[in-house]
Image (cartoon, rainbow, N blue to C red; front, side, top):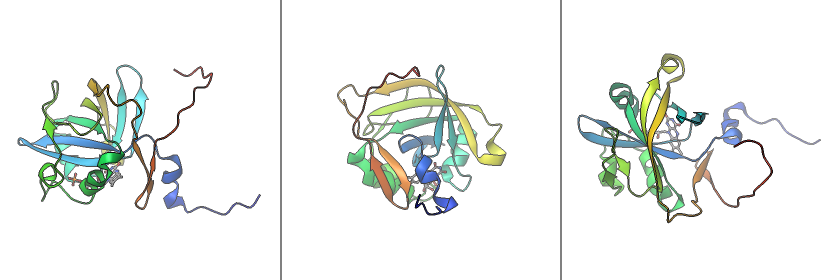
Length: 178
Ligand SMILES: Cc1cc2nc3c(=O)[nH]c(=O)nc-3n(C[C@H](O)[C@H](O)[C@H](O)COP(=O)(O)O)c2cc1C
């Protein structure tokens, strides 16, 4: 076995969960958006998602004060915009204007759907017990939207340091997991 040690700070890139998503929020009527890859499913129904949002980000205060957000799922065609949103802060930049992203009104929450994303999940914060220690919000998806024309969404998955994996082939196996 010729394995080498792997730096602990890069481990997350091996275990990285699902797609990079765009978390949109609204504060005083002004929308903002940030990419987020540190998230995890916690329950099937109602769907619960754990989201780590650093308290250094402008989005943290928006999500904490409003208790509402939309998790938008982008694909490779807007990857440059996604990264651009991660290199700027809503504290100083109107990212919707700068990156030409289109806001659409949500039905259940006060945060915008991003039209360019193939799926949008309207969410409400339901648990902040882990907020002080881990900046973790548990959100419940209260309404979900999907573009039926997108059959094989090429979602993007963060490997760290500017590298991304694009979702590709799927296989069907006899798994008991639903
Ligand atoms: C691919 C990618 C994934 C990211 N994942 C997270 C994350 O899970 N949690 C987080 O707090 N910041 C994450 N960031 C960093 C924020 O998106 C970044 O700090 C952003 O500028 C915050 O914007 P805001 O200040 O407008 O909230 C990520 C950035 C990129 C590019």
